[in-house]
Image (cartoon, rainbow, N blue to C red):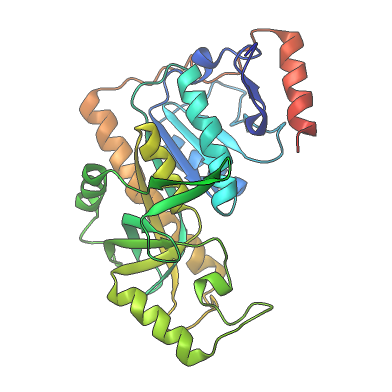
Length: 313
């Protein structure tokens, strides 16, 4: 190709100097919403002591795409992945290519998010041991050229164990690990009875959720299958760390105050932050303040990439 345009990130291999901008990245941290990506970036800036030049502020690098938000704090890239497998899948293709063009070696990817618990209380931090689909299969099945391609949905076991060891025993909430079920639907696909449609009754729902619990499933969300499968396929170490917002065995709707939910959502961030800080300290990594600024290779191509990203559907 003449150049590789990452449409949904508003970046291009010939319009931007991607090595200059992202060459020092070690950690890619993904959350659902643009606001969560910005909040995590602000949090990590404080945690690792990252200083911005006087008169500057954090910038959404992908602001011209209007689809995802991306912030860089030293060796950390904080990105929103949207909701569901299609959204996170598109992002992963372009983030993996971005790492390639930036000549990043051995990055570590995290999905940091929320989920529904199965037999565990709200506020519990769950580290995924394995991702399974709605049929309990540990693979991401993707139709490609009329054929179904199966990709194993595997997490990095050592990374998962390292995260679990970092859980603070003094925390007033548990940190556990187990299977994560990833669905393509929030309502019927997760056994909820409060959607627009419902073809089952309460007894059938409870029997299904209890079956999931018996199979070792401890939480349900909507991105882990594609996230783990695509990172594993690319040879990238990855982990999924989520906080439960309710126990699905006790109901379908979240009834906690906003300030409680906000505090809960910080819990996975705290665990991932502990891992990042320990890694940087162990490796003696020095944050290079010269990386991360927007570096334009070709002003003409830069403008064209912005225009294409704004109009691309």
